[in-house]
Length: 112
Image 1 (cartoon, rainbow, N blue to C red):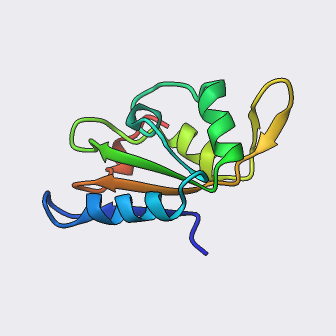
Image 2 (image 1 turned 135 degrees about the vertical axis):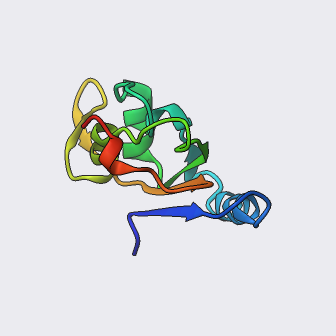
Image 3 (image 1 turned 30 degrees about the vertical axis):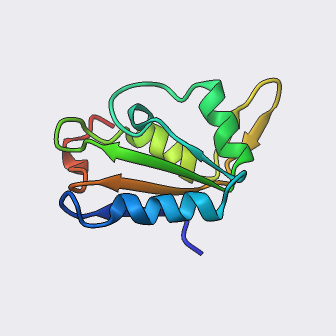
């Protein structure tokens, strides 16, 4: 089973349709992750950590890797085996992650 999948294609190639089908199929077990968690320098907040530890799948739409660099620290926290601060305890992420973007991130440019 995959831990994450990145759908990369130009616009209007069916990425959104596929993600909508996946979200509908996992209704109640799937949540949306805001793109700013995956790029930029934002820390992983408690609400996002709770989603990662309670949902089967998180979808992240319209991640703009053309303008922003991948936040490697958050990416590793979500997909790794690290304990996330879910207050009042720490938990491991159980979610699968599905990301939609028009191009892959340039990890060499990432500050982490």
